[in-house]
Picture: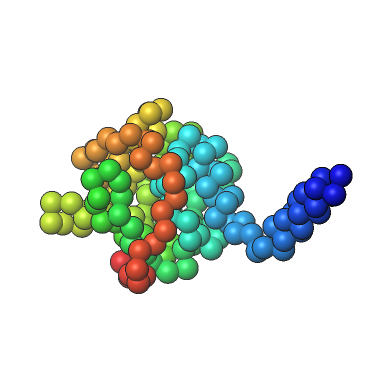
Length: 150
């Protein structure tokens, strides 16, 4: 019986300590919104301070506080996120995207849109597209090293 009481006490203690840990609500909420629109959470870094989303028009903005860089899977492209990322989202499509650039072929390219086709994501860079498996973006990346301006 004492083992059960100790276990019960430990559960209560863990529950209480979990509730006192500050939550990162904006980050959690915006990543939930990505899932609701058919996208994996790994399209945005984990360090989100706030976001806005107009449910009617789909216009959104995400505030990272600072610009950051990450390495995108699977080909390890260097990407930079401006301190503010914006665009228009509907089920399966992000358009008018502003604030994400990727380095490929010795040049920086702005990602202007992303489409979800189920198992794949199609990244748009102007008229050019690149397709990658969605599963490569299942985890939200951390910004690397120092924060960078873009």
